[in-house]
Image (tube, rainbow, N blue to C red):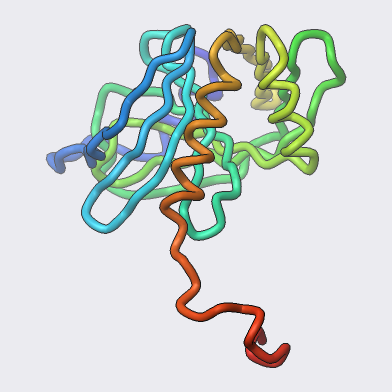
Length: 191
């Protein structure tokens, strides 16, 4: 197991809590990718994911109805439930579609109480450029470095464009609507 993944494991320890299980609704498979709505109580998210390339690891783009801004995340199933939530900043990572220039990314490693997954959350300054490349490319490659030995993953992109479009559209449809028409409001009403 790569050292970075071992670091993900160290974020939490096993406990007796049951894993948080989101209900998966409106699931649609497209190529290597799947789009869906996730719900748990009042929480609602939309996701486009490649869950096909690795049996215990998936790369996802999440959309949250508040602003529908995409969020990039790698989930590794650790096989045990975390007793507490923790997160740490990791070494910067990189993402690259095909042979296009790489995108450096800040990476946060996290584990959430009651969940068996360990997460690597990526933030890159050129998010929308990267998403465009994901839509038109063949393979997304990830690199993470723990300071000792880098590790790499590759995710096929066939079906990514349709899954991303669908997840984003479902998010925008679910976005809370303004109670009043903004055109009739004064500028100071927005501050």
